[in-house]
Length: 338
Ligand code: NAD
Ligand code: WQD
Picture 1 (tube, protein in one colour):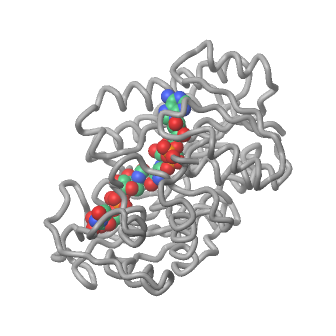
Picture 2 (tube, rainbow, N blue to C red):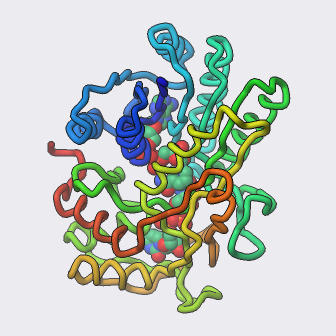
């Protein structure tokens, strides 16, 4: 079975490609490298000891996408390609709508034309907006608080409409919670551009001495220690969820929407402590004002994933911190400089 992985050079995509190959799938990676580099794919090839077809192109460019389907017999698509920075999406909404929504539209048009109607889509817990309670089940109401989230929500609805129009489509919407960690080899991981927005890369870059101090965004939330609570999930567990989605995709008789999380909520201060214990490094921090748009608590009810995908997260917070740290320590400048 041949899988097209859009955004396969990125953080989650690169980890998923490893598991796909280890599970016996043929893989074609398609990426425009707007937030990644060929180096990640070279390192994945080194891990799996196999050459992987890699095509540079943009999902918004119909010709680029058609060329893949002409050259390869694609059975299913795992669609990671997208822009993902919440703050940037507020500043550049049109860029996000163009890249994420229009890009997915072009991809689906080409898939339809070539009779490939199976897609696993990277959605996000952000579609739950500010949830009324936790843990969050898939039936919670959805809303968006920023253009990035709105792009995910719209794509989910677009894919649902596509299924309604043609039941031959097989669609899985995976709502990821907060992916962290890295492949245990320490050779691939998250490589944000500039100063990280997300907590774990900020912590690891502080620990390695690239940043001086972690700002903890608010300590007056209604949580056990006042700092924001999230469901951090190891990226390899997340990748595994995609393999499980492919295993059931042919049997689907409706659009399948699934949370991928651990079900456990950790606060910012819990994460600092867990990281310090796992790495033996101190993470200096100071309490800063709340970040606009942040919510107090967000963690999954992961029981539906267990029921329909036979999937559950296996790696604990210590492994997540150890693996994030190994990647950061071995690659203080990410893929740059290699
Ligand atoms: P990433 O930026 O590392 O990977 C995305 C990849 O897509 C990059 O390699 C980028 O170059 C590529 N890309 C972007 N636009 C493209 C385009 N128009 N054409 C071709 N390639 C394009 O991000 P990630 O963390 O691996 O996230 C993957 C997906 O998961 C994204 O859709 C993201 O929105 C979603 N997601 C991520 C998180 C998270 O916290 N990392 C959480 C929930 C959902
Ligand atoms: C986690 C916690 C912050 C940085 C974002 C997107 C979401 C999804 C995952 C894509 C919060 C606190 C953070 C820092 C801090 N991405 N924090 N200091 O906000 O849960 O989710 O990434 O879909 O859509 O919104 O993740 O890692 O940014 O923050 O105190 O320097 O850490 O306030 O409580 P978030 P995050």
